[in-house]
Image 1 (cartoon, protein in one colour):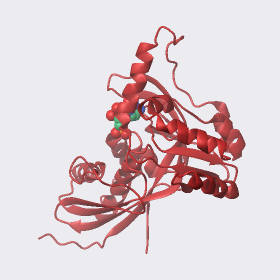
Image 2 (tube, protein in one colour):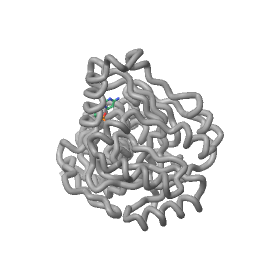
Image 3 (cartoon, rainbow, N blue to C red):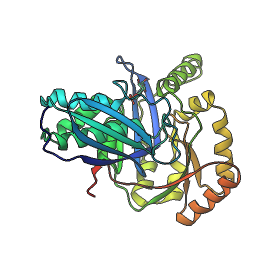
Length: 312
Ligand code: C5P
């Protein structure tokens, strides 16, 4: 038995909304070039890493999250994150990872990416690897396009696969009402549905798909902290394919927008929908209205910090 001097490390990492997401062409590596504006929101995954001989994982729900089908072996991004860090830093110890999920699974809010980011930070501390921030961000990008953002949090612009980040100036607090779906959607399937649609309509799409860019109106709205302005600028190229794969999202969007939301959008590859409201009171009113229509909602605010160690 190896000795385990360090006590356990607990980390919280946030889910995200893409307030703007433009998808460009598919690249040679199968990923799409994209330009997105991420906002981290106050819905957190909690991860505890405890010294152990091997890398093991258990997953539990924190609130009404359906965790059935979440793998606890090497298919889980958190396990892959721990292995990648150990390998890179030359660590021969293990860790038991315990995740409590609050972010909808396969919901388009980066829950799995938050778990991976939390694992990198927790294991880095547990094992005292001292790899530094830059290398940790590079490892994060190897794990998945959204993992670097889960480390940094706040409001940021993502380019490349979405993993090349630059901070965006953002003022104030935005109030969102989320409607999680009963079942998740597969991100690769949503991208594939977008590709199919573009292929079918390529005669009509002219000029061909342009290089993706986050519009000046989005940046200005974030900088001003103005929800009315941001509501006018929300956009997501993955919304149409998500709606094609899950037509019931349309009704959720319509109900939210008819019940007082400034605007609604599919979050990332969906199927979670996110409604922007004017302030905390308006968010509460929308929550009441959507609940009366039979929808379960979550009220969150953004931006919030990225993955962070929690001291009890
Ligand atoms: O990087 P991540 O594991 O989150 O990506 C999941 C899938 O989403 C990829 O396998 C790919 O099919 C698709 N994707 C993409 N272009 C991106 C990001 C993700 O095609 N920029």
